[in-house]
Structures are given as C-alpha cells and as structure tokens.
Image (cartoon, rainbow, N blue to C red; front, side):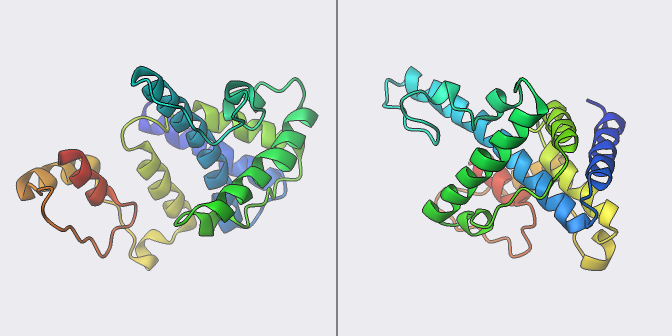
Length: 204
C-alpha cells in the first residue's frame, strides 16, 4: 500500500467518525487505537498459537479456551457479522468489556484499557471503521508508526508538542552503528513509539 493510499484511508476513517458524531479529535484517535489494538490482538494470538503448536507447547491465549478460533470477540469473526446490528452489539457488549477485563488483569498497558468504552453510536460508522482498519497493513513494517505520525499531524500537535518520529531506516542505521549487546543497558528517555528500543531488541 502506497503512502497516499494509506493516508486516504486514514482521512476516510477520520471523516467517518466525525460523520458518526465523534467530533473530538482525541476521542477519534482513542477509538481508532482501541479498534487497531483489537485487530492486533487477534493477529498476535493467531501467530502465538501457530508457534506453540509447532513447538508442541500448550497453547494458552486470551480468547475462549474451549473454542478460541470461533470466539465472537476475535476481530476476524465479528468483522464478518451478518448485519450491522450484530457487529455493533458484539463490539459494544463483548469486545470492549473484554478489553476492560484484560486491563484489570494485566500490568503495564492495563492502565490504558480498564476504562475502554465504545464511543461510536452509529452502527454504520462502526461497520465502516472496521472495514477500513481491516484493510490497513498494521502487521507490515513501520505502518503503526506512520499512522501515529499522520494522526498527530492531523491534530496539528506534532510541532507544538515536540513529538517527532524517526524514520525506520534511520533507526536501523543508528542501531547498527551503536551495535547494542545483550549484556548492556539501553535507555531512551524520549522513546515516543519505542522505535529505537524495538530496533535494539531486533538487532540483539
């Protein structure tokens, strides 16, 4: 997906939320982030399951233990809901409560999930948002960072807040030059999206 296509999808998503009554840009970003996180949970859980099966390890995911693949809270399942009514009800009454449950039982990111609430009121808006987010290449390269940067730009806060993201190829070069070792401690006090920390982990 080209950068223009990517930005066009974000613009369309942004306008969809506004048309659906979610006017506060911070709320728009919050809702996009929650939905992205739900999709990434499904992607990560599927990948972990395949890994555990290859290694003959017991699989323990975050979905229904008895039938995880058919859990309605999985992105791949509710996105195929028969009607907008069903999709809306599953996301509102099952997916977001699941996020809050994860927030209560997890350290770290749990703080950001424990108050997760679906703010979208129009069913058609949620359907469109799910369709657009499903088409984004979130599991490829640095696209999540591109999304973060572009939404900051839309908020016109990047320059005011002093928040700038280092491009992936620059991170890769700088990490290669520094050549961090597993025995060393790494500190990035202005980590932002943690690009340098993730780059260092991948390098090691």
